[in-house]
Each structure stands twice: as structure tokens, then as C-alpha cells.
Amino acid sequence: MGLIAALAVLRVAVLVVELPGRPLLRLRAEAAVRARGWTVVSRPEDADLVLVCGTPRPEVAAAVDDLWSRVPVPRARRTVRTAEQLPDALDSAARVLADTALQRRTAAEAPPLVRAAAAPGACALARDWPAGLLLDCAVDRAGRITAVGERRLPAEPEDDPLPDPAVLLAIADAAGLLRLAGLPALALRLDRVVDLALGGRDLGALRPRVRRVAAAVRRSASLARLLRHDTPGVDVRARLLALLEPEGDAVATPSKRRLIGRPAAALPLLVAATEPVPGDA
Image (cartoon, rainbow, N blue to C red; front, side):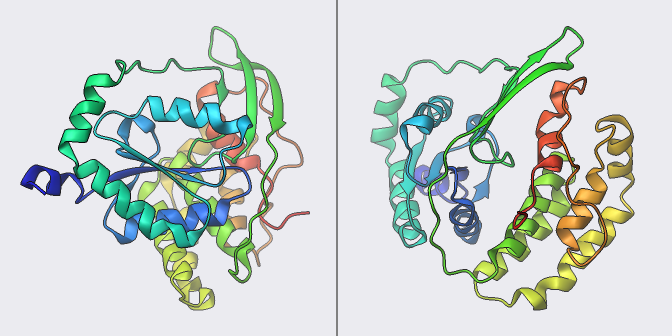
């Protein structure tokens, strides 16, 4: 392996794609990526590797292909169906990314990248978006939502031995909500909690770390400004605290998702703040 190829795999940017029903596999994949010193990214344009978690059924195969078409060369793509497949998948992806001859051929054969236009809807496979949720929105000239159609893709069952997964999924959901709210540093602290728990650390022993993030949420001026301007009628702060402090009395989810009249740019945050919490009936 040449020097350039070796440097190329030191810090791979990975887009982890969660297929419907595989949230724990997605968390394990992200933990495995970070354990290598690689980076989890949110956009295909920023990725070197697309790592698909689950079985790409016909309903989502086209969406996965669309994400892949937007990844620049050098690039690699892998699909895992179990956590046991992750080490080999990441190793083989690194070899593909380091194969300069292969990447040159891929670059010569690949069609030109076209920047995707913003669409009045949301992809079921985006990071920090509920996997399998499809929204088709009409938007007026002011960028506000005027109509919404919603459906969910069928989810495959997940078999994972992790005890009490709802607590960990709630913490992961809080991390995603913090990213969408523009607080990535706090989100990374929760990602670390998830990684440690998946690595065998007792979640109860990690609870003080979660409480410290909750305390930071309570005093965050950035979040307070966000609530005033971007999410009228949706209490993002209460949702975050309900995810982080399930023993508290915060309201986790508004009774109804109300998107009509809201800015389309805030759609991911609004959806994340009104999605049923893990474990809810």
C-alpha cells in the first residue's frame, strides 16, 4: 500500500444507513466506525463509505442507490445484516478505498456527480430521521409546509441480545435531536455513552454522564433561541429532557404531529421532536 492510499484509510468518512427495523445494528455500526478513529457523516456528499445496516428490500433499494450515486470517488459500499459482519465489512471497505487502481477506474467510469435539488419531502434513510418514515410535503413560496402525506415502510425484525434497548435508543435519539438542533458537541457526549454501553459498560454507571448533558440542555442559550424561532408549539427542550431523564415529568411527545404552516427547513427537527419515543405503546 502506498503512502497516499495508507493516508486515505486513516480517517474514513462513513454514511451509516439504517434500514427500517434495525436501529441497534445502526448503533453498533456507528460505534465500530468511531472505534477505528473514522467519522460518521450525515450526507452522502461527505462520505467515503456507505455502510447499509439491514436487508435492502425493494421498497428502499432505490433510495440506497440514490445515496450511493451521490458519493464521490474514492468510495466503497458495504451491507451488513448482523453485528458480527461489521469487522470484515469495514476491513474490506478499507482495502477497496486504498486500491488506487480500482478507484481510478471507478472515477473514469462513474457519471458526473449532480448536486441533488432540495425536495419538499424527506428521505426515509437520512441520518437522525426515523428509518422508514416517508413524508411528501407541499411547500408555498415562503418555504412553509401547506400539505403533508405520511407513510411508513415495513420494518424487518431485529434480533439483538442487548438488555433494555429502549433506554439506549432513547439516549441515541437525544443525540440525533441535539445534532439537528445545532449542538453537536453535546451529541458527541451521548454518542460516547452509547458506544461504551454497547462495549459492555453498565448503563447505570454511565447515567451521570447523561445527567450532565441534560443539565447542559437546561441552561443552553442556543437551544432557547432555537425554540423561540424555529419550532413554535413544539417543545424540543422538553422532548430532550424526557429522553435523557425518563424518571422526570417532562412530556416526551406532543399528542399530534403538526407540520402545516411550519418552515420546511425545520422539518427534520420537527419530526425528531414529535416521533414516539422508544418503548412507547
